[in-house]
Image 1 (cartoon, helix red, strand yellow):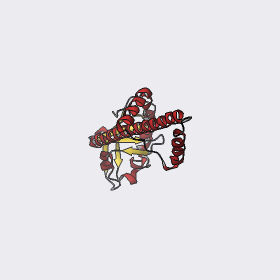
Image 2 (cartoon, helix red, strand yellow):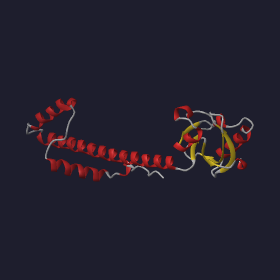
Image 3 (cartoon, one colour):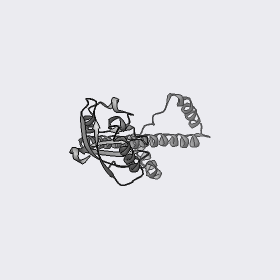
Length: 202
């Protein structure tokens, strides 16, 4: 199962500030600033040159520097989390495509919204050809009522419900499968999978 991304809200602000202070002190350089902020910084430096305002100006400048480093650290955390999520997504996609069964996600109207490579091979079509296409497109008209009833029951069930039926492919051949489906826990519609089965199982 895909790992949950790190929760940025759990990052200790005190720890973040401490790390920012250390990085800023270690680098012994000013944090990067945008071009639009150059005038404001110039004013700060002017204030810092006056004995009457030097202390407050330098304190404010230091706060701005620390804040910039904090933003840099937060950005690093976000980039790291994104990399982890992308790697997890790739692993999940590879596992789904390596499944020996066809895996499909149908919306509440029975139209295909996602599938794995095995499903594409079973239906002998490409992803652009299948996206948004109703399951009924591959079901014999005589079988559609019971398949539709099964799909609607599965849409209300947290546990998989099985059914055997025949697929009619675009080359006019028939493929008998044994399928299982249940409600999609992440949204409307159903999760479905099937494997080849003897025609007598339909």
